Length: 597
Image (cartoon, helix red, strand yellow):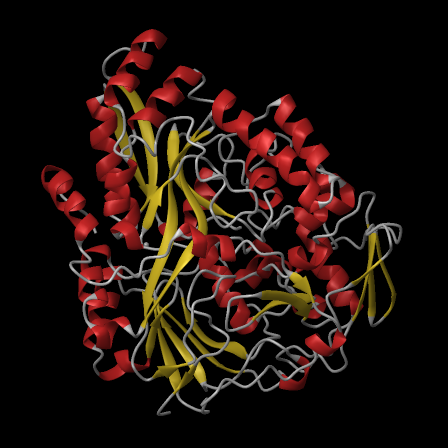
């Protein structure tokens, strides 16, 4: 899935001297409350196959939320600006959550009360009509889809939205559809995107009339409807595209539009009067708008929502979580706990190694053995924040093996310092060797930095810690020639398939600025295994994905598994329709209303 928007994800500076005691103390911060933390059985429920909806399932309006009322404004608490608002650039969870309010794509995920997912047509009439071999997919647009300016959306806008993903203008978005259409070096097929009058040939992408779009692939692509449901493939109307400027002032097709944006401070959304609920099977437009405040840290969000006074009654956490040290104040108080949502996130937190700079596998293995996963989990909410990871495929993925633990991280969740020192000695690493560690300026990132720096210094490194603004963290570590040795990243599935984890993060053909191969791994066997798995039916491919995963973790180790992430969020007492979304791993943004507008 998109990289995790450090939620602090999908997020308190702690003094180094007090770090160890203060942070480990959080692991029991849920007191004597009934244990409502999620287990791997809950995660397995999130790995169920996604269904594809027909025209009936894709027809709006969306099913009414029981008791929903219209009117009022929901206050949204978040602690930093969005990473992007241009759909083509969206691949991080905060922007993906925001996108569902203002953007629309060909398809979208529809989620029932039990968290079951169906891909339905969004601006298309259904999830897509495949050929028998699933190499050709045809989409028909619904009648009357307009942008906020009243312009009718046609197949030309869909073509434009796909083709602009080929241009150098787009650096941070997903690359699934482009690479399926034109190969791993897809940018060569249309290096300027649509901006100099060129288009993809009809043999690749056809728009025979104003309402029809046809994708033509050389290999079967059974997952296309799920890929197109990603926020990164939302529609950018051709007439409205302002290139670089679009990221600050996008044009809406969804139920809300931007009325005011003050970078780094606030975003005000109001109703988009051109959105027609009869065309939308997923979203509602119950409230009059959303007021985003981009400057409220995680601790302040939690305090306000626990107190539940004034404007906080109408507020939600967006992609931040309950501040870990306050989880006890949530789960031990029934009146507060009932306003929380809890769930298993699809993310795996991992220490990513820059293989261009840390070339000796023994050094990478030493750091992997040393990392104190349990301390980091304690700092992120204890059993409500996560659990130690043995591998890089999370519990929400089909084929997950809970016993897989090649580095004995489950056996030694606080690390094995002796083993680490032994490996470093074997590798000839001198005491005081410098390592540059990059982290985001979020509470989670800052807490992690304290723990990581202390442990790496304990095994002999001189750690230079570099803090990066949350909004640009993934952009900066996504530069191939970055100056960092290692960085903590969070990654999860885009849909329930290992292909959406292993391919974007570990495919050696995807090494370029803005790509998600943050370690720069380029292994011939891994690359070949990925190619083979991608040509197989999803169920049959699981064995191949496990084989590839095993080689990545055990024989190369480009990223040390640290922990599988969980979620706990709060909302105000006047906010209705609140439930946990298995698709986004946050409060479901689509069903909210105010009980007393």
